[in-house]
Amino acid sequence: MASLSGLASALESYRGRDRLIRTLGYCCQLVGGILVEQSPARAEVGTRLLTVSTQLSHCRTVLRLFDDLAMLAYTKQYGWGAEEEDIFIRWVSVLGNLADQLYYPCEHVAWAAEAKILHVDAAHWWTLSTALWGLSLLLGIARSLRMLLKLWRQRRSPAKAFPRGRRRSLEAQVCSELLTLLSNLADLANAVHWLPPGVLWAGRFPPWLVGLLGTVSSVLSTYQVVRASGSQADATSP
Image (tube, rainbow, N blue to C red; front, side):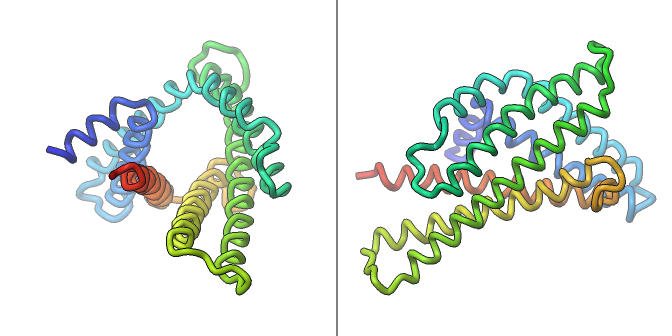
């Protein structure tokens, strides 16, 4: 009952529902792609799963129509990152926020063009939004690598004798950054795949590989949220 209550509580929030939709969508694409490619007898089932995946993706696109203000509030709160001591991390984060902020209106225009609401080239705007997503992921990867370098230097510094609690905190931060790095790398691989043909490996992934990378990214992101929630609960417990 506790796990059911936890799931219900997560689904009541927009972010929790979005994570579930994302994970289910990529899982359907993974299984559907495998069935279509490897099992001709179950190709029809695989095709249906790929259709479900496409519809779940469209669902997330429509829900993101309302994300601009939340992203703007976060961008304004972070500002120029004056509280960040590392200037590299500061500017990478600022540029990442800018890329994320521009991503949403570009995707909205692409969605409206595809729905015949606006008379513009939908493919052009989808490419632009995907490029901004890829840029955001690249900046996130650079930030994670910088953070990992700093954390590893702190852990191996002979001049510092960390107390046990501080050492556990550093290890938790290293684990979190590694998970973020892997998640962003998986998403970046898919982002490049969705760019126009001729850009690196664009258009070369079979559906099951896109589903696999997306599922890995989704599971890692969900695990981080659950892990962070558990850590907060332990910190607040008497």
